[in-house]
Length: 235
Image (cartoon, rainbow, N blue to C red):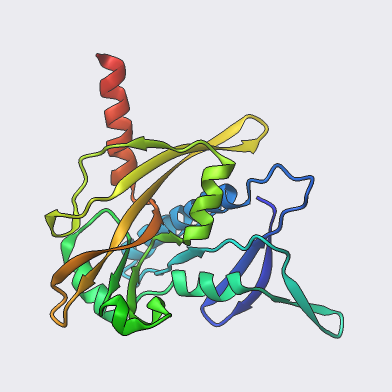
C-alpha cells in the first residue's frame, strides 16, 4: 500500500501514505483498504483469543487527508513529521465512554458514530469541542478524506436494509472498487450520516447539518451487499 510508519507510541500507531506528483493519486482509497484489512486481521486473532478465554484487542482507525506536503523537524538523523492530519486521525480513531455506553447495547453492524452534545451556537467556532465519538473496530474518515476519495475512484449509491439510529437516521451508502495493481481490486463501502444533537440522557434532540463518514467493516454488511447483488443476478 506504500504506507510508512510515522511513529509508534503507547497504544497508537500512525501510518502515512505520501503521494508524489507522478503517482496515480489513490492514497485515501488505499488507506481505506489497508484499514479494513487491519480490522480483519485483528478480528481473526480475537477469535483465537476468545477460544483461549483471553480478552480481545480493541482498536479504532482514523483516516485523515491533507492536501499539502507535511513539514519535518530533524532530531539528529531522525525526521519528525509535522502535519495537521496526525492530530485529526487521532481524534477520528478515538472512542468516548459516554458514546460507547449508549451504542454497545444496540447491536448495530455500524462501528462508527458521532454525537453533538450542545447546539452549534453554544460551541462557538470549534464544533469538535462538543462532539463525542464512538469507534470500536471501525474506520472513521474525515470530510476532506471523503471528498478526496470521490476524486480517486467512482462511488455508486446503494440501498441496504440496515438499522437506522432512532429509526430516523437518513444515512447514505456509497460503494466502490479500489485498484491495487497486478489485477487486484478490493471493494469498499462508505456510510455517510449526519451528526445528531443529543441531550444529557443521550436522547435525540435533532439532526444537525454536520456529517461523518465510516468505512464499513462489519461482515454482516458485506453479506447483505452480496445477497442483494446475487438476488439481482438471479432475476
